[in-house]
Image 1: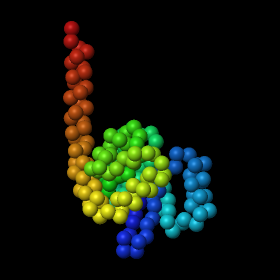
Image 2: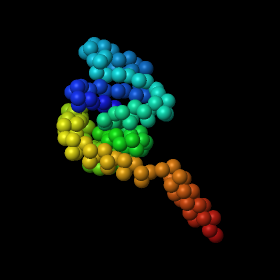
Image 3: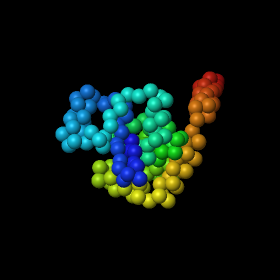
Image 4: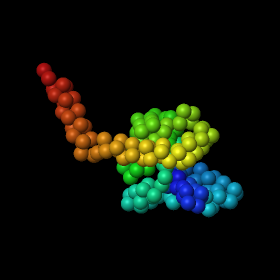
Length: 165
């Protein structure tokens, strides 16, 4: 996640969740130390559900660079508190980020393109607010009760189809 304070023209990147492997985690933390980025990058590790939403609501952007994702639920969670998502163009993420509405799917999955997109959004308050409003609106299309209803209807239809003589 990305937290930016316009008043102080400062920023901080937040890494939330477990690293995929311990080795990778040690590598990333060593880079933060090596380049003296401790004041610019904060590693939270695993956080509770309530803490996750607290951090999402304080973040200016959620940056999701997953190269493979089943859906990207965290994108919708971020959107629900008005935090837009900048993501790589990967399966799952392109479904959970409504490009130009709830965030931006970068055209090229590279750190350079990611940085350009972040800069474009942070420096354009009109675009930032548009995406913020769009994020909340997009997130309201998703809820667990509706998902359960649709899933049960689908299962009933499948059952009926297979039980026909």
